[in-house]
Amino acid sequence: MSVEDLKKMLSKVASQNINVSVSQEMTREAGSLVTRKIWLPKVLYDFLPYFYLTAGFAAFFATLYISNWFWVLPHYLLFSAGCLHLGFMVYRRRRIGRSNKTQQQD
Image (cartoon, rainbow, N blue to C red; front, side, top):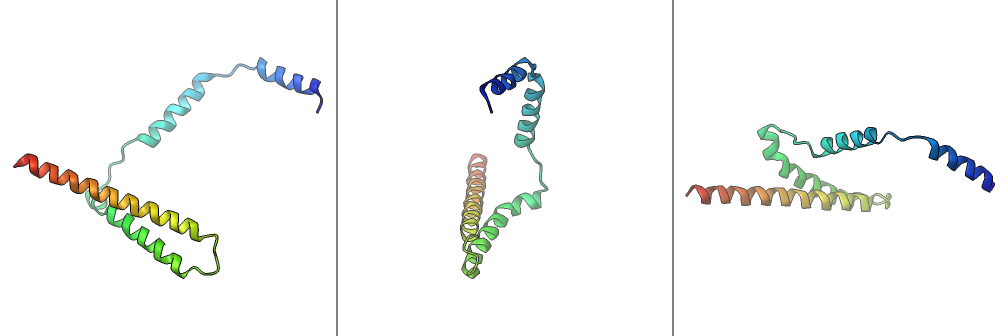
């Protein structure tokens, strides 16, 4: 590729107008999709930390039985650590929130 070809490519790109509002709108929609509140049924909401803990322990104990696929072990360990951390944090925050509500009521 010569320098003149590069100049032609750059001049073609620079001459095109980019509609910034479209990209800003896409960013705003993607952000609202990620940060949107999700309402779960109460049974599912109450069961969520136990699901995370169960999935974390299951993934951790699955690493004990994987012998031939060594490349999968770090993924299982990372997933189990993430699930266990998330499960303990959700459980702890809910427990602290419940104890604060009962102290305020008394």
